[in-house]
Each structure stands twice: as structure tokens, then as C-alpha cells.
Length: 135
Image (cartoon, rainbow, N blue to C red; front, side):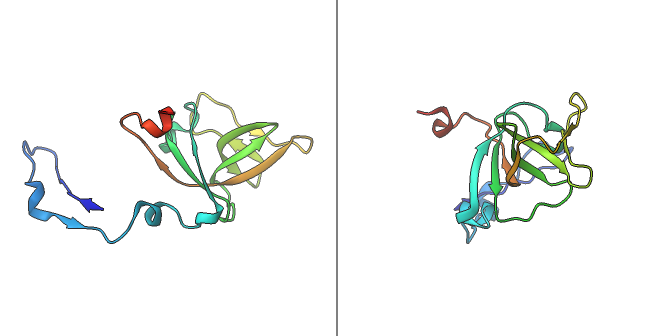
């Protein structure tokens, strides 16, 4: 993959020539984003409940099933038949949103709850992807 880094800082009105520091990275996006290919799936976020940690509606989530869940991890789970992306409080058995407009949810013993994996990366598309648009 060829990368043209463009550095900008406050107060600068122009950009350095992109060709002045042109180099090639020795890796692929797969290598950069996916640690455990056979245990990883990709999903798309829906809603604004995780916006305060930088996950926005329609962001791409890279979810790793191989990673051990830790307290305060961002997870994808099946909660009572619905897929959710939340922070998990393993000590208090809570699903937490990263938006003050949403309340925490207690995971009760009678709830159907299964962690599908840990969100290890998220990606924001600044233009609609034909792949995601189904074209």
C-alpha cells in the first residue's frame, strides 16, 4: 500500500508537498486490523449509544472472538435476542453506553446473554462504500 502522509498544524496555511516524503508501508490492511483472522468478524454499528468513545452510527467494527473479555471492554453481544455493542462492566454485570442519554442495563440471570466478541478496532467511512451499500 502506498501512503502519502500530509502533515498540518494550526496556523499553517499550506501543506507540505506530498511527494517529499512518499514511502511504502510493508503491510496490508488485513495485517494492521485483524490479529486473529479465523476468530474475527466485521459488523456495522447502528445508533449513537457509543459516540463518546468514538464509535458512531454506520462505523465498521472489527470484532475478535479470540480475545479474552476484560472489564470495560467494548463488546458485541447477543442480549435477549438483540445484537448490541456496549461497554461491559464485568464486576457489576452491566452493559454500559458511552452516551449520557442512555441508561446502563443490568444483565439478570434470566436474561439470554452471550458475548460474541471484543471490538478491537473501529473504522469510519467518510464516503458511502459500494460494498456496504449492497451495490
